[in-house]
Image 1 (cartoon, rainbow, N blue to C red):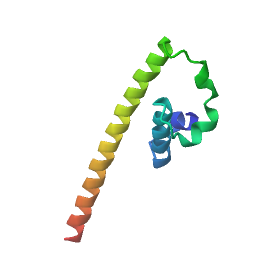
Image 2 (cartoon, rainbow, N blue to C red):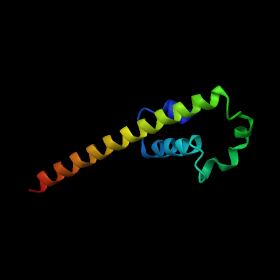
Image 3 (tube, rainbow, N blue to C red):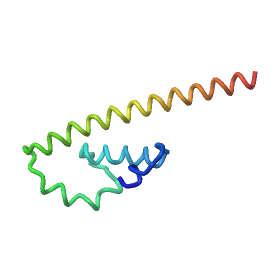
Length: 88
């Protein structure tokens, strides 16, 4: 998270970390690098207000990741179009 706060842009590594964070918050059963750090989850009350807040923030993170992916796709398509024009 500290590297994310200090980043001037979202490079590939930071994007992958955001996806991993989303997987962690979504309780994905295969969360890779975070598996050794899950002991804090046992302190949450599933009916507690903080769990609802985490769920809402996780949904917002998902929406942002989708938007980032769509922008990347559009940028990649534009780059391919420029390459095709240069080749022609």
